[in-house]
Amino acid sequence: MDFTALLFAGLTTLSLSVGQQESRIIPSGNLQQLPTGGATSSLFQSIDESVVVEGTRSKFERARSLIRGLPVNEAMARLAEFFLGSPYLAMSLDQSGREQLRLDLTQFDCMLFVEQLLAIVSADSFDGFAELTRRLRYRNGEISYCTRQHYFHDWVGSAQLQGVLEASPAWPGQARRHLSLNFMSSHRDRYPALQSPALFDCIDELEQGRRIDQHYLPLAALNDALPSLQSGDIFAVATRVEGLDVSHTGVLVRDGSRLDAIHAAPGRGVMRSRSFTTYLRSVPDAIGAVIVRPQRVKSVHFCSNEALTSKSCR
Image (cartoon, rainbow, N blue to C red):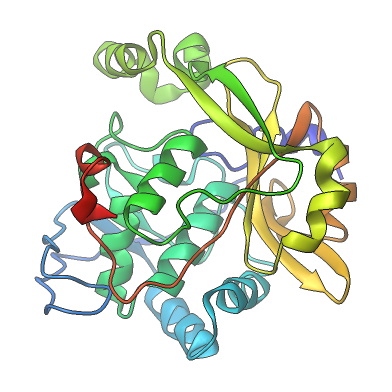
């Protein structure tokens, strides 16, 4: 495998030159107000700016039938295996001239693969799936390029805020580092959208002086941590690339005593890499892995990012 291609593979923020399959996009129309209860709460708002790629609704129904009654970790793993062989589509969210809520279960980049699996296991209807996708993908659910969660760190924060990821998992041997998140503004040429002065100024303003703390498992600590990891955990490759938090994402799946990685890779589609540790050590510039764990909730908390400190959203 060409792991150089995986360095920025699948992340919605990064531009890759790979073959793309065209997809017929069908406007979904307005997603109607949902009934109160379940993963589709009364806080749902109709989504006008949305497209549903042909075949996505039927894929959703088949996927939901496969995981009915399963614990969330087993459901994530089952779905990852269900989508094996799906085509890879680079820059999945940049297929149209304007920002829209794109729902596509027929082809993926690595980040969209993880996001859509988590939304499927956490929703009880297609409309709930669409709304949770919107809340995970966009800050405060506001659909625009500038409010899109371009970095894994921010996406995890949204998922934890909605209650579909555990708040602060800690793993044996875990380390912490302080890093800047400014890859987009410092690599403007990689992003066609940032040729717009207004969009560039917006992203640049968000990234100016921004630094985060990242908790990750260093490569040297992987073997000790493996017994604590389980099928369905989400992994992201922590990278030493300046200005970037992670370079690739996927789902962990156990096969007996071995832990594998299922992920969407350029030129390969959704594939299974035997032995997560072997795979991770082969990725250029990898320093370890960020691991987060999905959790089942009775209802999704559709909270805003500004409510992070609010006890009502925890």
